[in-house]
Image 1 (cartoon, rainbow, N blue to C red):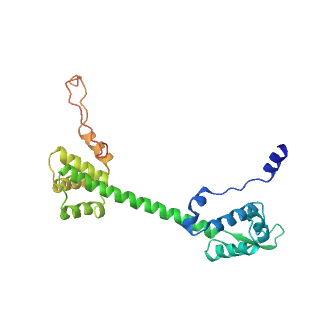
Image 2 (cartoon, rainbow, N blue to C red):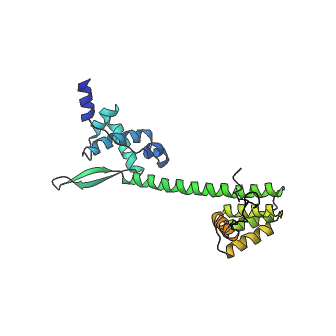
Image 3 (cartoon, rainbow, N blue to C red):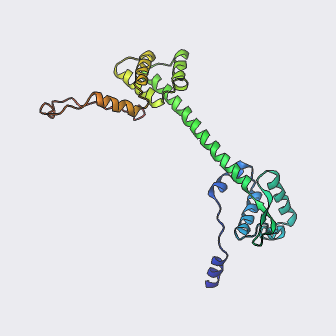
Length: 231
């Protein structure tokens, strides 16, 4: 057991990014290509920039021609290139280079982020429509839908601000987009762009009373304004 432990430690470890393991198929890499990459990575980490194909084949239990085929596929799919790098003596030697694979993974990450942002925006839009219909107690007309889309796309009102304007309209029993529009325009003129800014502004305008007259039970507490999503 001690001999095994010593050999296990001496053989070292190969570090592979979990992001690659999670997304290798999405960048066009097959399972066989991933296996070859893992074998190449172990030797490249040890300083062998271009291990022999027959060595890789022995580890994988393949014939050498299959390894050559997979290497060719990696190059053809723009996941790997062969480049020249200087060795310790300054002599040029061929080496496998996977910077194209890393670029594809980075582009995938950007695309995933953009998709997530777009999905979140779509969900927020749907939430706004659904909440207005719920509070108004009726479906929105096409003209009303267009008005709400203009708030989001042209006026760039945040969904949370529209939701807060809806809350104000409901408290005033004014079930009208025109009433909400006047609220939003008023906030815009006062440069209030978020629900938090509106709430702070309301707190400044309606400070809690202080002094002898502010006795418990006699003062009327402020009614907090919550986001409509807080159910």
